[in-house]
Length: 230
Ligand code: ZN
Image (tube, rainbow, N blue to C red; front, top):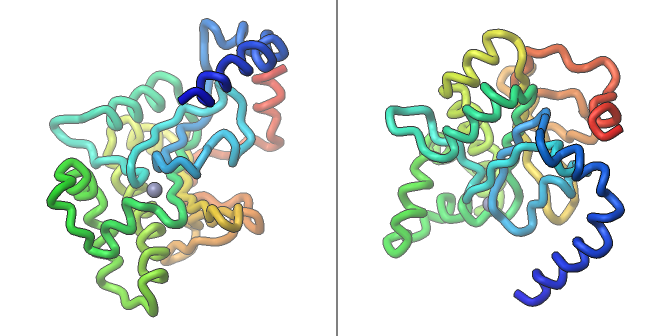
């Protein structure tokens, strides 16, 4: 823990003074353009991967980058999605899975979760992915896991569309959805191309314009960062 505290002291001593204008501007308001949903895994660092600054992204993290379908007893994820879309007005939502995901490994390997009842219950929100994955054959356990990570991103994209705030924003053409899978070893991202049937994951590096669901015309240039931080 001492390294964590020393890290903060370094931030306070070196980083904060150098960025004081940014933090002063952020002190009383935020206007993130993106809701980024990803796994709690320590190896997935959204701001590092996307080179974003404080104030740029609203973030939800949990085991398995899961978004429970909307229901009569909405929880913390649902409340956060609602706030991001209905209040902050984010224009894009990214659901980002990753390689070697422990949550997806638990499902794909049929791990005994008797001693982890909360995990067991939580992963039920990935049952659609589990069913899709089981309906296909896979050459190796690794291939099964890799496919499940992708199936889960698609399942969570379907789940998030059941949220009223998301459904309204999509119907009004002011939101795009993105499904990503980050490869930890390669530093690469595959993104779901919703324009093909069935949708396919393609390299984001080679296809930077793919969207899982596109309803909003993207900004012509990409000046948002400059205008937000300038
Ligand atoms: Zn994970």
